[in-house]
Length: 307
Ligand code: PSU
Ligand code: MN
Image 1 (spheres, rainbow, N blue to C red):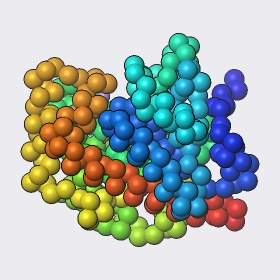
Image 2 (cartoon, rainbow, N blue to C red):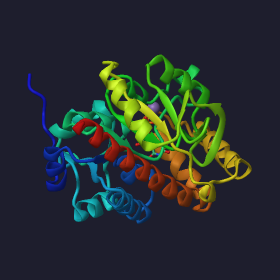
Image 3 (cartoon, protein in one colour):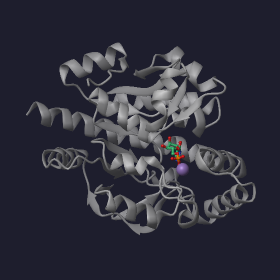
């Protein structure tokens, strides 16, 4: 059976045809990860950062049932304000298509659509992982299993401590996903530069990471890579400030019985409210920082592939 081809923006189609540098971007961060208008401003600013660093941005979403790779400005504006948008992980895409729904794509769905399109590098804020209490709830994000079967390099700022970071790293090890920290030994915790856990590997330049990607795929591993890029020092929050806020949000979710796919969006929104917008500011800076690294990797990777 032949595979579907998503609808591409003109600049993404051109870049693909010419072997140019492309960075995929997810859209659940727009539809379920940040409030309006910060979500729109962030999406536009992240695309601009990708362009400034020599690559073409490809924001991925489902619009009225159509798989889309690369959105126009008015489409981003609509998506950022749309009500009743679905949060789609990879498994939800087919039903969204049948029902003509508009959906923000999670890291898992975005990886899948990026691979279908032929885009190998993807920037986001944080990936999903193993939730705290997963030994009871079994709540493990499909982002992790997707990383275990889709050949995309995902640049993130580590994972938030809304998750069980130790178990998330164990799960990635089981899935044969290399975790590479950029310029540090530490695996970062999204708002902070250290999580208390080490990453498996450290590489110090975008070119080295692109080479590692290249070898990883040439080995036929079939898995993705997780690139952990710590939040810039000046934007980082202190653990004293953010850890209590996260603990409060996690407790509240538990008391209110919030689980399954609603859990992560609830926690993100609550942390933003409880931190009076401080977490949102940090979130915006770290996504921009990840887009910068991803674009540099994409430029280096495109050059490697041209040989
Ligand atoms: N973590 C964040 N910001 C986000 C998400 C996670 O700090 O926006 C979003 C991403 O789209 C991610 C998804 O792929 O949540 C994971 O959802 P779940 O935990 O339900 O798998
Ligand atoms: Mn889940």
